[in-house]
Length: 382
Length: 225
Image 1 (cartoon, rainbow over the protein chains, first blue to last red):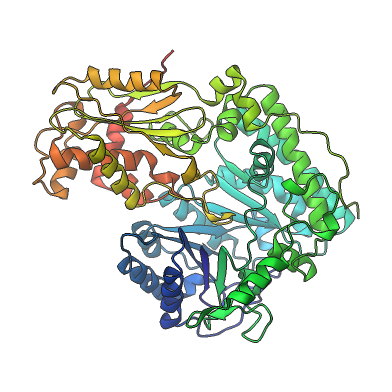
Image 2 (image 1 turned 90 degrees about the vertical axis):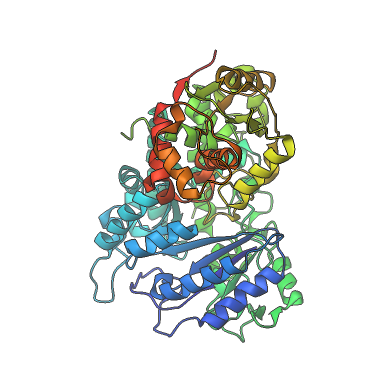
């Protein structure tokens, strides 16, 4: 089970593409968070990932510390260990919290949209000033203690031309795990998507070059698209089990099928319970069943097994309907798959050992790590 | 907008995992045979090996540790219980998780107990090499716990100090100390597998870690034929 605690709807930033525009509020109460934790433990899932989300979760560091402490206290044989995760804009990420995160096994993902121009085009403080320097500083401090942390970058129509440059920038900053995703709710034009397609082509060239140089990195969506062929469908359809494998908890303690729904309100159709009474199983299954495995828009498409069209959250963001696939997503998925396949064809064709190990050896993470530890790895990064 | 179902799509010009593994040459590239070893290794070693499809964790031990199979499995359990190794897939794809985290179900644990003579290091390496060879493994790492005074009565601090004293060059890590040392070796070797780089500070800043890093730096990478 993946449980997301929306600790607050407040945020220090005013990112203009945010699907949940921030508003000041006191945030989640400790009792609510503990109830969510205990309710999920009672459900006795085999696994338990607990994500702190927002708004900006680091506005409530004490709450996070208290929840983690409670989870550690509830740890017992037979119960799954709780994996803690947090996504932050980095503004309030200080060394003290980093020490806490490392000590408690709290994994931090950072939202940073790439180069300065890409980031500050949309991620600004209320007074209009840029958050780039603060976030970049946070990245550097995070990577010092968590070198494998994930960086989330959002691509907008007006920043699409910076995607490849942003990937290179982040890799050069030392980030190895990068996830680029589109703001599907943005006003994409055909011309914007042509630019994006050009960026994918450029990024494919760089992916090949970086791999040939032995650099280690994870770059979504390339990795997922490659995996969807190499491992035959893996990686694309494992996200959307609305309310079944994931739940979002609003600051008030109401339960929702996923993060995009958490602001719908208690009386909204997407509310499927609360942390005190638990999940309304009928409502939960209704949502799970509403998310059809193949969307009408996609009938007959040869790429459905490699495409993100099943993600109810993204569909809702783009079209307002969990089963509504936007043409932007369709076009994006096609270009991403094509770019990844070019990468795969080149590197597989030349039998590149790094590519083969990365994508064909299930133990690659372990082996790669051993290489790192033994000082053999990271050529090109020194 | 140019969007809509793709009616026909040529298969990608690169192989699936199944296809690649059926090709011995590709398989050899994807699963290089390697044995990292430490020349001074004595007491016990952990071999983390991967076969073509299944990672295997093997435990190699010797007197005076005398880990039997059940005890060795217990050690592995302890390591996993400490959340140093991944036990499951991230529950939401790569959204928050380390994307390359292996699926627990794809892991198989094999424990090979090799009793070798105290003070001898080569038998450990031989055993490791044999495991790698006979198990059709393509990669392995050996680590060593070490020396003398880390018996079961010793404290965690003493154990750490023992490591700090550069004990990996000689000596024997006994009893519980050996178990702990092994657990730490294994955890150290595998920890960043877990989602986003678990315990980086612990493993990169602490005194134990500095010793471990020193140890790792001494590990001699020797590619087996």
